Amino acid sequence: MTRKERLRRVAILCCHCLRNLAFYKAGWRGKSLVLEGEFWINVNSNFLDICVLEWCKLFCDANGKHHWRKIISDQSSFFNSLLHQLGITEDEFNSYIKSMKEYRDKFVAHLDSEETMNIPILDITKNSVSFLYDYLLQHEVEGDFFVDARGNASEFYDSFLREGISVYGRLTT
Image 1 (cartoon, helix red, strand yellow):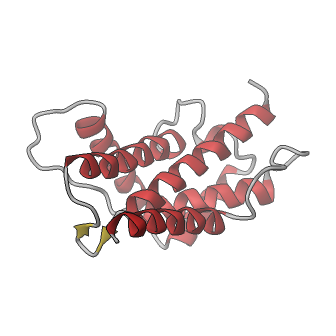
Image 2 (tube, helix red, strand yellow):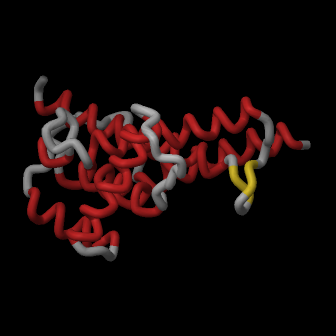
Image 3 (cartoon, helix red, strand yellow):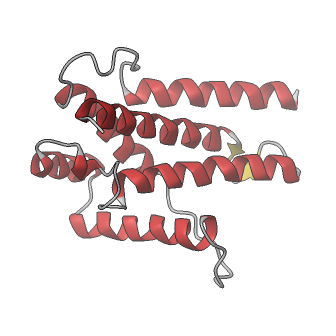
């Protein structure tokens, strides 16, 4: 796989993660799902699961093809800036990775013997993927790799959050 292809795929994973996170969030009003019933519970859960799977490809699986370390040129600068942007330490980030892997491994990829599912707090998910996406566009572009990319991660996420809220709104009126 060429660097251009890898960069595009990492950016696409960022977009998939953010879009699924936005649709997941759009399905909630406070602590309640907007629409009830097994279908809507499953739809909402699927958005969460795909979001977690995509995030893990980008941040958890250091040996995976799409891990950020395989594509970022200045890894030290990126990682230090990421931690600063998130307002957490490296140990806290590693702990977050562990919680995401645990959710993925024990409730998405397998249904292990744990009886309580702990959904990770998704602020770090959104902020880390947004940082990675924006960093790619600002620091890793080496040609016309991203001619079809949205301006920035925040605009991308917000557009899908609005779309999700609009769809749920039409279905509840």
